[in-house]
Length: 144
Picture 1 (cartoon, rainbow, N blue to C red):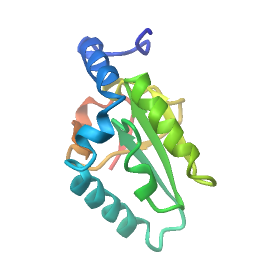
Picture 2 (tube, rainbow, N blue to C red):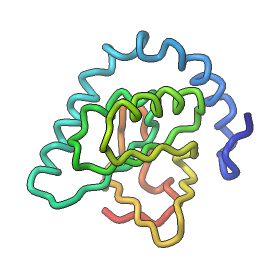
Picture 3 (cartoon, helix red, strand yellow):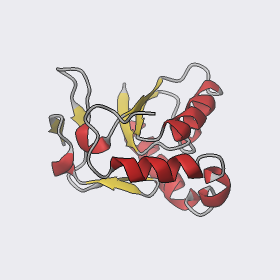
Picture 4 (cartoon, rainbow, N blue to C red):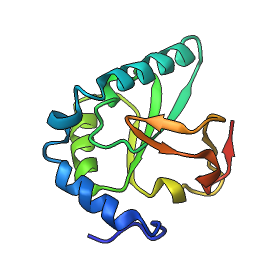
């Protein structure tokens, strides 16, 4: 399986590792990383409370373990390099009818969203389920 067109030089090894982990990822890391996922979801709930609409970019969405924890009104865009991880995330998203969830195979260091798309990232690095991307490395215009 080929990498996204703009994947970084490190991407091949990352994809191979996560493709190997995909079948057992939830079992191996599910409970270990659960506190971080819960904290992230609680923060999203606080931000979404009272907001008419909220869109969220989850970098390194993996198998989608956090997807069911987000408020229903939040539109989630998840990106990951591993197609094997995304297959599991798509299955999980499919079990959440009515949710606005879009999943893309993409290198988070080289985001390829359509022109005119604004991706919102906080001032500090975005950390999602153990993966991080410094704001300065997101190549799509980002707003705080």
